[in-house]
Length: 295
Image 1: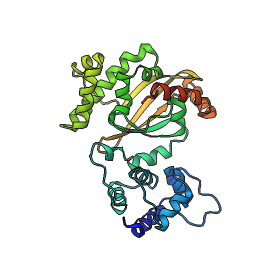
Image 2: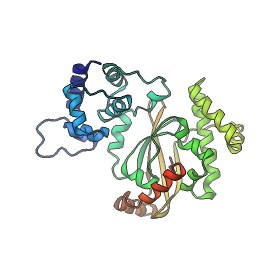
Image 3: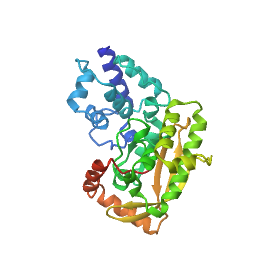
Image 4: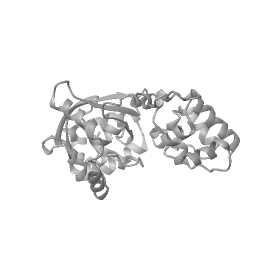
């Protein structure tokens, strides 16, 4: 592990990130244009003392999970992320469609930072949630940590009945069709990919509904959709869900809106007021039941 070079690289990346790039106010007393150490630590979910030790090259041994969090906080591109892993003497993510695809692409992350007044999140093409803003957490609940396709919402839709509670029962057939058609398109684009093949094979075994829909061979990436989301405090909220795809198609930025003057717009405004304060009981139940989350 090349601690001096790792420290220098982290400092150089921190200096190049402006507070506005990550949704932070510049403040009147900032002496440097880049981020402060404690701000990087906060964005990466680390203690300020631990991050300071990393920048000083004083023996901290970052794990692969810590490096991934730092890469996201510092908005590193793929080559820069790989360089960070090399300096820390950690193995690179093994699969182009697997762990490395779960490194949030900086362009999408930058847009997410600017969507402060609407629920938004970044997901993989297999519907694993990578990062959410606070309004998305308030609307949908906090997503499980990404550990593979089985944590994705499309997989849980067909294997965990609790996952469906986020939509009214009469809307379930529509969402089932949309998920399967979307996965058909992803499978075709990926080609002979073991990750998606393993996921679809498991779903065929576990869900007769999935198997029947898969055999229809309906194909269609979901770009927009009108949704009714069941919120524990606000009831059913009618929203439009929009998707922005990354250039390689491996990730999507989703955001939720409602036309001005509608009940959905009023509910979104109220959601911004109550935030996640009413979600504690829901999240406790979600942990018990395996998580309820939508995309």
